[in-house]
Length: 281
Image (cartoon, rainbow, N blue to C red):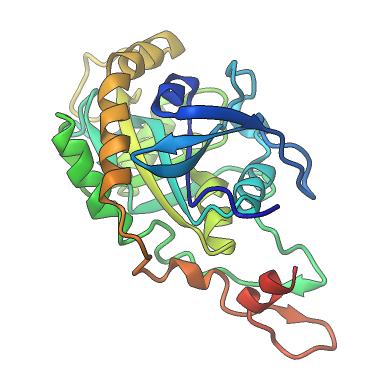
């Protein structure tokens, strides 16, 4: 497919209204279909692809999302930078519902998810040191602040399997490990994007205090209804933040994300840079 978009927004259906002159595009990938047809349109004068990770009607639970198809499909359209608004629970008293955290680290507690494009005969090892784009993070924080949101510029998110929410004991363990937030979709989404040399920034909206939060005996068990209520209350500000982020984007990337996976090792062959392999395809 020819390049048709430089940017993508992976989020919920409440963000569709960002796009002007929207059109739906069916995308085929080696990993099956993405969660939904990609909606392509213009935002702030830039071509943007929009993909709802849970499907247009939110029918795909987090552990059943075809993350590889989603990321591969967007990359095949030419996307180099991914903006990923998401809902998170807070593991800290000072990260309150309605506030935004720009994630810079994660802890993976998922299982059985297809989390790499390299399953043999090529063997590749992605550095997990800094999966989130260091260039887009500060821009996302500034855009969110301008939209009227309280912003925390750094945060570690623990990604759980879902679809159930954490037990109180699990929440206490995650907080004890130094995690600030809990989410169900950040992994492997961000890692797959980095494998393909894409920039990825997460604008994480805190929707609830997680069960078992230390220092808050009044915190009730989280419910899906509560999460959606807080998200919907802040959707207008999130739209403004995403628009502001797109307007702040530099024309060219100045980060290290484009490197993707440095080398691929194939049995009986010399090591070949991933960038070269992708160009050949």
